[in-house]
Amino acid sequence: MRWDIFCQIVDNYGDAGICWRLARSLSSIHGQEVRIFCDDLPTLNLLASGVDPAIKARVELLPWEASYANARHPVQAPDVVIEAFGCDLPERYLAGLFIAAEKPIIINLEYLSAEPWIMEFHGKPSPQSHGIPKYFYFPGFQDEVGGLLLDPIPLAGELTAQNIPEDLKSAWSMLRPNAKRVSIFCYPGAPLKKWLDDLGALDENFDILLAHGHAELLDLALDKPISLPENIQLLSIPFVSQDEYDWVLSQCDFNIVRGEDSFIRAQLAGKPFIWHIYPQEDRAHEVKLAAFLDLYLENTSQELRLKIIAAMTWDMPSNWIDSLDAWSGHALAWRSHLLEKQHDGGLAARLLRFVG
Image (cartoon, rainbow, N blue to C red; front, side):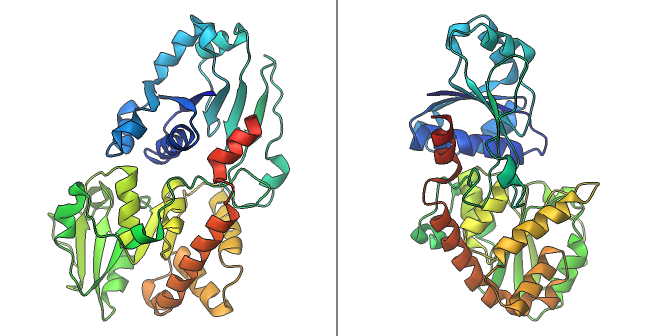
């Protein structure tokens, strides 16, 4: 089938990351024809860089305005149109669909959630005045919803691989053999300086890998004096492709991630992590985080459960890091649980069955 995915970038990387990973899964694993129309093509191209050229060549990455041509060529109407995260389709593109001989299915791809209420709304129709069928589609952890975007699934051997990507060799050469590795990719509101100061009070070395732009974004520029203990080493890594970032997560002892794509990849890395969920003014993010933790911690001891909740809500590391070994064991068990629950292929495969 032919798929058109529309992506308007709100969170800089997250929305584009999900759209690209879905497109590559549909094309390279499931043999679908996919186009992405994006309002920030440079960011999308950056995320798609570094992958096998044969995989990238299967997906057309196009500027948002390129979709307007569909109004002049209605015979090119796709089988499926995806509105990523509820973005509105361009009116000129819709006009082409109206006069197409065969109408597509429109999928409103929602944000990932662990909240129970999504089971009632997943797959429900959204009647439109133009008559083209449209449906709500909710990615999620439960069997009854749209699944998780897992592709590509890292093999067990890859989680400990030492084939360092070229872009990361400089930073990796500065890592200390006796230090724990922590990667950080978070939003500006995180209490990061205080968190690092507390980490520095521990009797252990930590190498902190800051995602691209974080040194400046979080006022931790490496060319300025920073009053951090000697056991803390800050390293900035360059902008890397999705596959290279996945590799970083697998090579760290602890990860701080944000958004949706890195959140899932941290779980697939099988390592302890903090999910810095996007903060919302009405504090709805707290409900979403609690819903995930209810699933994530369902089979843990009460002691470990309290420690992980404390970490996820930015309690200082000294209050929970003594449980890191137990958390590491839980993270591997959760990874196995996720892969077992998504044995049907996860989001991409479930989407195919839904529209088929």
